[in-house]
Image (cartoon, rainbow, N blue to C red; front, side, top):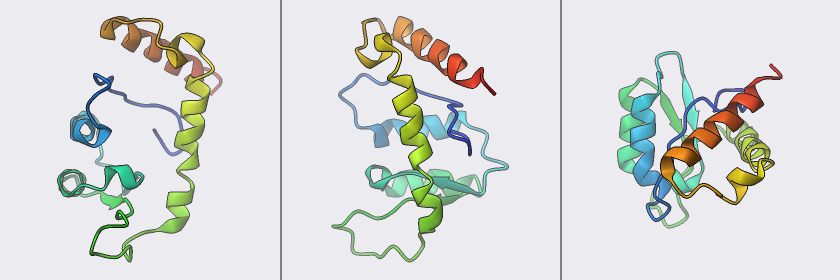
Length: 125
């Protein structure tokens, strides 16, 4: 998602793999040269992902899980609260019934449906 909550890249996983394992591949597909801070929720608290983000000279604004021994001193909580834009984008995507219920069982077809829905989201701009 960009700063306005518009989708810029997505990866459709197999549904059984946790998102944090697919996230480094998504980071590789993004151009983070002009990105200063990347926000994510606690589910993406992973050392591997943090390293991948910081290799691109971008700061990772990801809170630590409650069972972590380190604190959240690095967090910018104002930017983290703006993450609701991501949740709003998922809500807009779910307005498309075929995406919300995943009518297309083939990954290729489902990816195309999600891409088309993302285009519809971008159109009002």
